[in-house]
Image 1 (cartoon, rainbow, N blue to C red):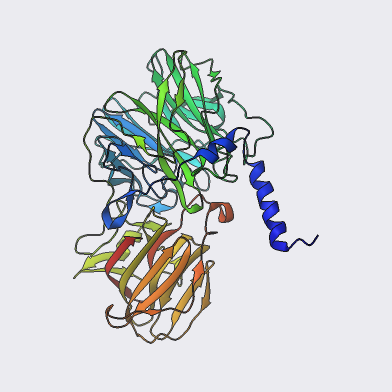
Image 2 (cartoon, rainbow, N blue to C red):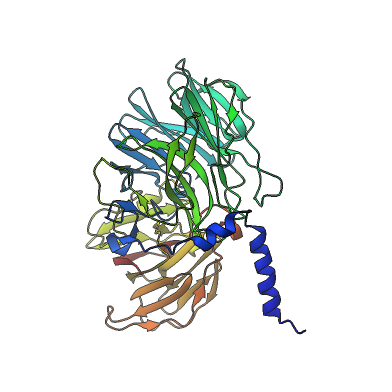
Amino acid sequence: MDISRRETFAAALAGSAAALVRPGAAAAMAARKPAPDWKRGFDNQRIADLGNGKFLNPLLSGDRADPAILKDGADYYMTFSSFDSYPGLTIWHSRDLVNWQPRRAALTKNIGSVWAVSLEKHDNRYFLYIPVKAKPNSIFVIWADHIDGPWSDPIDLGLHNHIDPCHAVGEDGSRWLFLSGGDRIRLAADGLSTVGAVEHVYDPWRYPEDWVVEGFAPEGPKLHRHGDYFYMITAVGGTAGPPTGHMVIAARARSIHGPWENCPANPLVHTTSIDEKWWSRGHASLVEAPDGSWWSIYHGYENGYWTLGRQALLDPIEWTKDGWFRMKGGDLSQPIRKPKGGSALPHGQPLSDDFSQALELGRKWNFFKPAPDESRRQRVEDGALVLKASGTAPSSSSPLLLITGDQAYQFECDVEIAPGGVAGLLLFYDEKLYCGLGFDEKRFVTHQYGIERGRPANPHGRRMKMRVTNNRHVISFHTSGDGGQTWQRFDRGMEVSGYHHNVRGGFLMLRPGLYSAGEGEARFRDFRFRAL
């Protein structure tokens, strides 16, 4: 019998997929309904609220990893790991737990790559405990008397061997930071320094040896006090890698000092099949909705879209008679009834920008790995973003980036360069992995795989309109020399489904952006974004 290479590959792929399906999951997959489409908001971006009393995940699309949520009276505030983007740690605001608006960024000083933070309020003061990957790694704290700031300068707590802090207050009023690996350290009364040494207090539940995971890696502890217990929710299994790796487990204790009892139903959240809508689900928090119902917020990768990063997901929970809780949302592929009460804010924000007002740094735009004075490179004048050149290519120019959360989208901009300058539009993961199209006075500059790929002739001179289309990872470029009346397709298409963490590392997403390199200043006008 003859077997083709394609048949052999298909059989091998089917076998690999079968290995990632836990027993009992196949029947659930077969019965799954097709997912409906999302409602659309600013710039046709997808939004969770369907307008019929239900919502459809993601709660917040795009790179919203490691959600840290705070209930503050009738208000909810949330932020996410911002990694190498600054201003970072944008605070989002909601009054109904489903519709969210960005406010301001809390962190303006580049202290390294920002990972999973803890957002807290204690004695009428707001705190952010911030782990960073830097040299050395450490954990910082900033504070403010109002959620919009001003926030203090970062204070280094000198914790170089841990990540993912979570602030907790014991039954005796003591303040603690719980850390990765089941450890903790006491905080001073003002929360701005530590007392004593790190101690190990918890051994997390461990999954069966035959489960396909990235690694044990207990991380992201979140502490909640409810009824007679403190609950510690932890992520294990690795935050990326195999789609079935990341999961949510829980433990409880009657005292902040333990002993901690693992939940008999662990794991409470776990992707069991690569056919599910959401992969690598984990890093969960609990929060009470306006109507008194309880919910969990965590992150996950969208099936087939690692390039969008880990997106924020909302899952209803139920407290059980034995004092534990369980998740009720299943695989989150179907609409879920919204919590009642509260009031809905307009969700999200326009990503289009006519540059008629000061640049919304932190709220919308971020620099990548900026220098201390990076923001001085930009100004807005006469309806244009003026961006001083830096470096020689996107890799060294600290581009300006946006977060988008749609599977397909298009963005365009009028770009003008000075003599000796080079500028253009990008899809940017990090300084070693990006693609895009730029130009100087005489030639285009093609970027692919994080390197320069070619310099064909530029017929438009120092000003043109440029358009980038990302149609579910298939990239095309168009240019116009007559102000957008006619467009010419640029003769290099690309495919970018591999521009993500499991290839490159870093936990980032592929982001639209602008860059200005070489000499002089570039002017960007009429930036338009539209989800497709």
